Image (cartoon, rainbow, N blue to C red):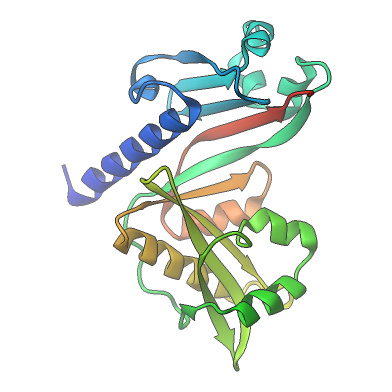
Length: 231
């Protein structure tokens, strides 16, 4: 077994352990069961995660009963999932990707982002794009600057003490020039140096984000779907 495949296996093990912890089930749930149902009466949502051939569904007991007859495809489709639960609202379905190896150094210089960098990039993109990037609440952020002006921001948020959730966004007028890739690479390298496993989560249908992750060496590991339940 090569060093790279060893790292890939360890990263996927960390991913599974982190999601099992978040969903409230045993660490090995993604290793041995085709489908694990987790009763979580403290939740106001249904969360479904598929990693490899295994799936975990976490939901309040009443919702679990309603979902028992759904097939795998419906459980991973937030719209279909919500249709089976009257009054619920789809939160979305997303690809989950994991870094399998250390990426090469970024093509453009990357520096720690300051408040000005964050403000200027935020002003240059649509509000929904900024929100989807997930960069806003991240305390650890990096920027790429062009002639002193920030053109991309990336960061990571430690999650479950094992993973680093990566977020990135580029100024609308500067896309297609590799700035987002460089900023994201800076965040990925920092996460790896901190002993964390980089995770990339992107909405199903967001082709640009998916392609960027794959260019940076992320590999698809699974899918997540979620719906908000009525109060």
